[in-house]
Image (cartoon, rainbow, N blue to C red; front, side, top):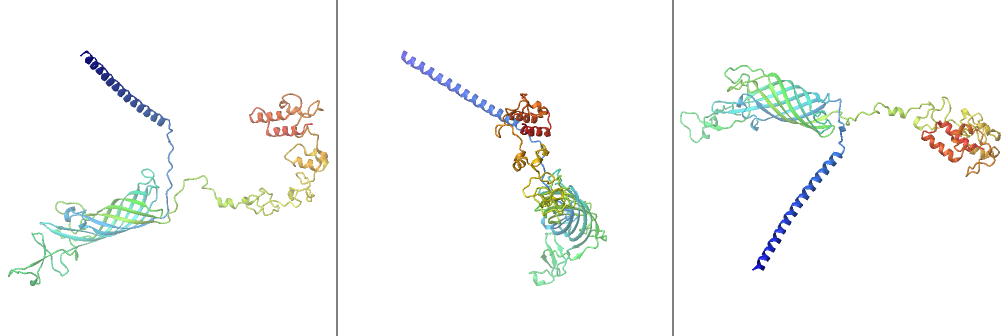
Length: 488
């Protein structure tokens, strides 16, 4: 029994320990995952904060422009808004009629333009009710002047976008001709019955199976939409004579899609408010007041006349005439600058096909400034084209920009002065007891004060010159190098 209790107690301790260990492990795992997520989040925020924010304004792409207007043609449907039917069926297809427009538009500024629009079409309506029955169709011709407001003006939408929404409004003048449908093609009048049918008086008694003696008989029919009867006087009780012209005020919006710089397709909707109440031949009804109007929704195709390439951003080179530059000849020798090998030739000096003065003796000095125009072939000459003799070396001075000294010495070996050391070592000659002649001018470069400028001292002088530690001009540094090679 004791052994059984002992085993049970041991098992309980083992189970409890395992449970606590698992719980502790689970808590540790949750804490580790949470710390990892927080560390990852902190790293992302630090990376985001370290990333520089691009505050530069993005350059908009160029847009196309033209001084010429655009021409567009469109078609759509016209929906009547007036007294007949009391606007009940304004947006149903039963009262739709076709309309056509021709438009000339000019975008004068980025956000503003002007347009002339011509419109031809019809409006119609049919009212069938227990109390009355009216129908009409009116032909409309009008011209209008519109002010355009473009929303792709770089303030709302990028001017270079292919989508161009716009608003417009204006004023126009219209003429109209209303008609009504009272009879069919045979001249028989329409009668409206209480059961909702439309009938005509029967002329052929055989068309009806039963005829009541002494009473007229009628055929059931439908309106043929012929609109044969002109409305010159209003259909209401006043029968007032109708004036068939008037002002019209269009207000609309549209969306243009730019197929290319040359062509656009446009969808638009326009509400036309007219200054007449007789488009339908009827003035007011059932408490409906105000003038008649209509809505014209259309799809049009536009041609942008003379539309060029997109307008490039301004450049500092815009005012430069490159064609003129290509043809310039500054020295006036007849050879263009971009083909002239010898720019700046004095006026009147003959030149060859490359624009260079002639040099007949080929000594490198042009004939017009050659004091010895017939120097021997291969002769060494000075800046004036005169042959340099053996006795002329000292007159050359130390200007290394003159005739190359190595050529002079090769031609006249006797003129070669005694070199300092060998060609490769530039060692100080043993015979030099008092230093090189003229060393006083470059004494500050002679670091060891031995009266001789060594290669190392020349190198140090050049380094100090470029470091700003040696107050020499470029000419004096050049003279130092000449002195280094000439010192005896």
